[in-house]
Amino acid sequence: MPLALLSVSDKTGLVAFARRLVEDCGYSLVSSGGTAKTLATAGLSVTKVSDYTGSPEILGGRVKTLHPRIHGGILARREVAQDVADLEANEIQPIDLVVVNLYPFEQTIAKSDVTLPEAVEQIDIGGPAMLRASAKNFAHVTVLCQPAQYDAYLDEWQKSSGAVSFEFRKACALAGFEHTAAYDRAIATYLSTDEEGTAADTSLPSRYTLTGTQRQSLRYGENPHQQAAWYQSGSEPMGWAAATKLQGKELSYNNLVDLEAARRIVAEFQDDPAAVVIKHTNPCGVAQATTLSDAYRRAFDADSMSAFGGIVALNRAIDAATAQALTQTFLECVVAPSCESEAQEILAAKSKLRVLTLPDLVTGTADAVRLIAGGFLLQDADESPATPDDWKVVTETQPTPEQWQELIFAWKVCKHVKSNAIVVTSDRTTLGIGAGQMNRVGAVNIALQQAGDRTQGATLASDGFFPFDDSVRQAAAAGIGAIAQPGGSLRDKDSIDAANELGLAMIFTGIRHFLH
Image (cartoon, rainbow, N blue to C red; front, side, top):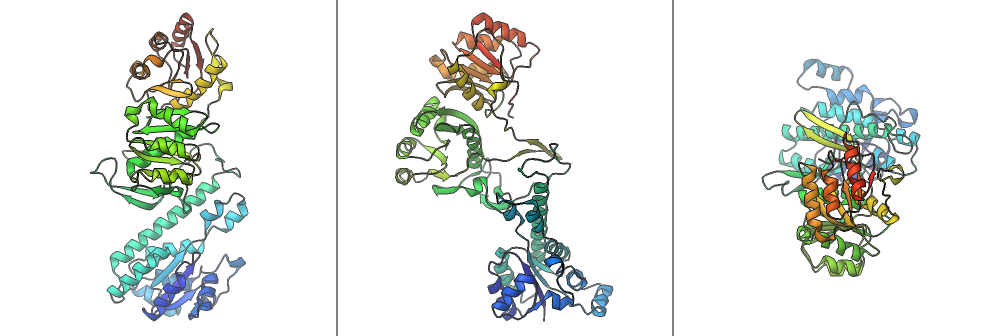
């Protein structure tokens, strides 16, 4: 009889699968610990690993399957005479099927109160060893590492009358190696942080692995000729994988990219209702107000032409008034922490509009990765908060309390606009945005032109320093009253002198926010 080894933490579908292995495929079963108990309780004939090996489980279960009878049976090459002789000499039966999934390490560390010793005990040793051994010997052994593979294996077995194809075994081996790679990456990431979840070593790692499980195949990428898929990091859904789609079409590649850009901006504003409208990853309108509906209307009106077909992020639950406003134009997606039932009924009239709820719009990735030829670049995400206490007023004119609040708002938005970036705001609402320009003067021109006659007394923020005083003079001529910029140019004095001459207030933040 062919021999199957089963040792799983996730017992989803286990009993039904094992029963089919015995009754339809003629397998005898060897199993360990809780898996053996589950199968025996279900009335299946199963040999415990300890009985099969003749060695008891020791160290509180830390050592169960690490034994020559197990790994010899998995790793033996059936076409190598010495391997076959070794099996016969040691009375080891070849193992044809290995069904293993691992201790729930990621689920354990996801708990807010988990301790280091608890996490360490969920680092599987025997499981990865069996997975890697059986995946290595896929020429003779099939390895299954997740319940979703069970039906596919049974279908393959029946189709081939038990002669499982090389291609199927190889595909399963690949899945096994991908599984152990992701598992090891999760452990390494966890051990690189301290008890508060922050990096124990502030330097970037000497090795970096990015792993994920395909969550959804997308229709296409940025353009129809590009293939694309959505991958989830970790076993527990987080971020957009944890969002709920209340209505609308399937999300596209561009939807997800723009939703993330919108999330990053709206995460900056927690104290008051805020709304962000995104187009091609750049904000075309951002606003704060006393009500969510007012914030959305202001953000939309900031650039209503660009907002058509845009992505909207809101930092409060969608209420009826906001829902009514959202249905007045064509939008691709709307995301908010939640949606009131009356609002959901109103939004249903726009059945193609994708409406998502994501309770945690604040938490994002800690790293930013960009692929380049022959490798990739890695940097910390730009999550530095606006810290006005560290800002320096460099002009004779001091910002008023109202201007200080406006400078903070403008600076938070400017951080998320593609460089070169200029943002003009008033009353916590963007008036003009110059994004992605090759020179800063061009970005200033676009932002001021877009703001039109609303610039009198408004605020301007720049993601990088002014290399010359021309931008300051442009702003003053348009009626701008206060400017925020990083400072750090060799010609900072020219800009400061121009601001003093023209009566502007200007602050240096001391931090740059380039976004390429």
